[in-house]
Image 1 (cartoon, rainbow, N blue to C red):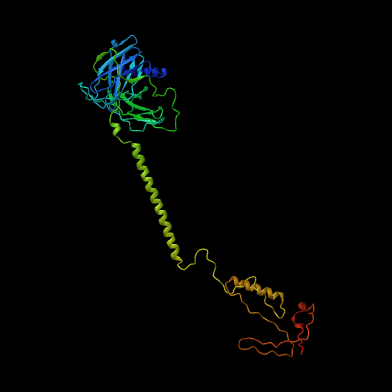
Image 2 (cartoon, one colour):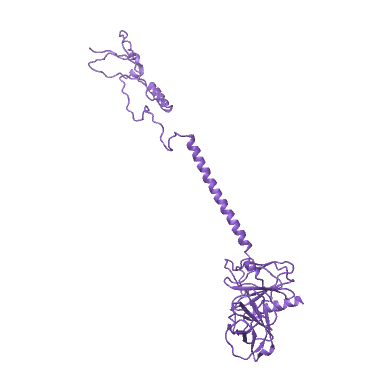
Length: 407
């Protein structure tokens, strides 16, 4: 029996989607609390049925007698059992399948015009939850319907558009549906179990946008609908009372008041990451500050970075003027002294070295002893002329130098 019911609804939904258009259209009069609501339509195949889905309430099924349809047109009036301000949609079906007549836009019950009726909701037989975000081509979760007799059937309804059926597998109490509905579409969901028990109707859900459109195709549910409007109708009608709900039912009110677990987890994780970043940055700056303090403490009198080396007042530059020596000295001695001076400069010692003089005199001449400062005063030398130095002087050495002095 259960398998036959599910097969019937599956074939009906598939048939409606393949046709791509409603078999007929219907109109309604403005709804009021406990007032008469009139339905009129053209086309379709008897029998006809109405299903009313109040938001956060229990669905109501209304059976339409075959006498209400004649010569391709029909009308039917019944008392609306909803209180003022209650929002709902109506789906109409015929023999060709569920939702073949389309679904109204969201209706709001007006104030009472004097009618009396019981507006108390009959209540649900079980509950289910919708705790995830509804997004295009993303998984959408139906959960916690353990109180239902499985298998269950989920009915998706687009106000002013199409309806579709989902069939979760038997056993689990959670079901993931890939939302193959275009972003921006409004949806509401209902659920019925294998015994026809009701789970309630959800609030309006709006499909969120994503960057994934791979699941959208020609068979995706859409807001395309036939002419379903609220208007006055004066055609003759058959009056009937609101019937007890029997087959299709909808989700409970509970999930709308629950915070998404994913949202809570995301908030907690984000907070922990933020705290970790702040602590890491604080430790980094504190460590740099301590390193700078230790660096300055170890060298309280050190010069600034990039300061030049200490000044040596005795270092000779490469452009210092040459010392004029009245007597020749050998190249070897000059080279040795220059090397010594360079080493002294590199060692940080004064580069100044007193000049040493070698004076060649006659054997008979006696030089005065040096004074207390170690200075030897040499007598002046005079000559009438100074002849050219012999070319062999430098090579012969200082022992044969001419030391004669003219008077």
